[in-house]
Image (cartoon, rainbow, N blue to C red; front, side, top):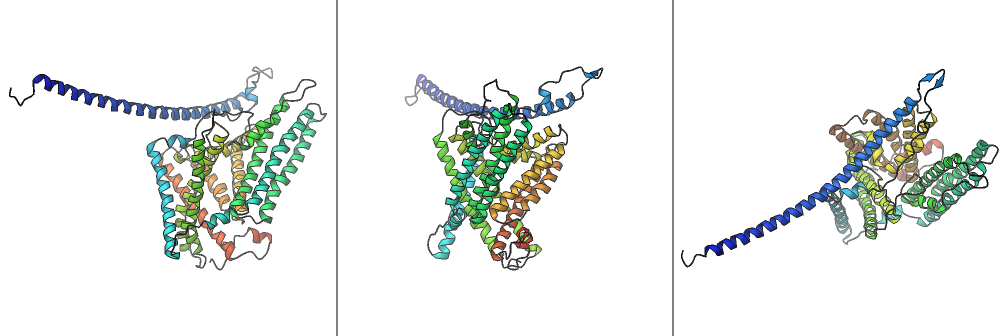
Length: 526
C-alpha cells in the first residue's frame, strides 16, 4: 500500500456511509411515493364506492319495480288471494335519499392532470383579455377595457330586486300558511275531497297570478334587458318548483297521519321551509345532511370563479359572436352563408355550454351549498362520459332531473298504475322542452322555438335510439358531435334572430307577427 492510498478501513467506512445515505434517500422518496399512491388510491376507492352504490341503487329500483308488477298477479284459492299485499307493494319508493358527498369536479380537480385542463381554460380567458386590449389599442390608440355589453345585459337591477323580493315573500308565506290552514280542517271537515279541491283551486289561482302572470308582466312592461329577464324568469320557475315540492311532500303526510283528539297535525317547521327555499335542491325534506362548518376560503374561491365565468362569457360573445353576426346583417341569405355561420358558431356554442355548466351547476350551487352547510353536492354526474343521450339527460342536471323524475315520471306511473312508461317519459320530455323554450323566449324577448325542436323532437329520438344499451366509446364521440352541432345551430339561429329583431322591428302586435321569426323576412339580414 502506498502513502497516497487510503487505508482499507477508512475506504470501507466511506463507502458504507455513502451507501447508507443513498439507501435512506431512496427509502424516503419511496415512502413519499407510496404515501402519494395511497392517497390517490383512497380517492379512487371513494369515487368507485359512490359509483357502485349508485349502480346498486338503480338496479335495486329496477328489481323492486319488477317485483311490484309481479305482486299484482298472485295465486288465489276460492277467489281469494293467498298472500296479503305488503305495504311496500302498495306504494312507490320513498323518494330521493340525501347523503354526504362532494361534487365530482371538486374531486377531479385534486388530480393534477384534470387540474391542468382547468388551467388551460384560464389561459384562454387571459388570451381573450389580451386580444381585446390589443384590438382596442389598435383601433383607438389607447388601452380600453369596456364592459358595455355586461352593463346593458344586467340593467334595471333595481326592478329585478323588488320583483324578486315580492316573489320570495309570496313563496315563503302563502304555500306554508295555506298548509297550516288546510291541515287541521282536513281530518274534521265533512267532505275531505271538497276541502282539498277547494283549497287547491284557490292556491293554484293565486299561484297563477303571482308567480305566473306577474313576472311576465314585469318583464314585458319594464322592457328588462336579457340577463335581468333571465333572473326574473328562472327565479319564477324555481319558486314554482320549490313550492310544488313542499306541498307535494307534506300534504300526503298530513293526510295519512290522523292526529289524536284535540291535537293539530304535525307541520314542518317554518325554519325548515325557509332553509329549503335557499338550499340547492328542488326536493323538500325537513332535514338534510349538514357539514360541521363553512369553508370560507372555498366560498371566496368559488365566488371568484363565478365572476370569472361571467367575464369569460362576455369575451366569448364580444370576440366570437358579435363580429360574426353583426357583419352578416347586410349580406344576402344563401345556403353557403348559413352553413358557414352554423359551423363558425360551434366553438362559441360549446364554450358557452361548458361555461354555463361550470358556472351554475358547479360554482353557483356549491356556493349556496357551502354557505348553508348543505352536504349533498351531487348536482351533476359524469355526463361527459355518456355513451347514450338517455344517460346524458339523467346526469347533466341532477337537481332538475330529480324533480322531473319524482313529480313527473313517477307520479304519472302511480296514477296509471305503473302502465304507459313510454307515455310518462314523453310527457316529461314535452314539459321540460316547453319550460326551456319559455325561459329562452322570455329571456331573449322573441319566440323562436329552436330549443323546443331540438329538445322535443331530436332529443326524444336520440333518447330512444341512443339508449343505455350503447356502451361503445364510439357513441360517446357521436354524443359529443351532436352536442357540438346542436350548440352551433342554437347560437347561430338565436344570434341571427337577435340582430333581425334590431334591424327589422315589429310593426304590429298580431299573433302571427309575434310568433314568426323576423330573420325569415328581414330584408336587411337577407
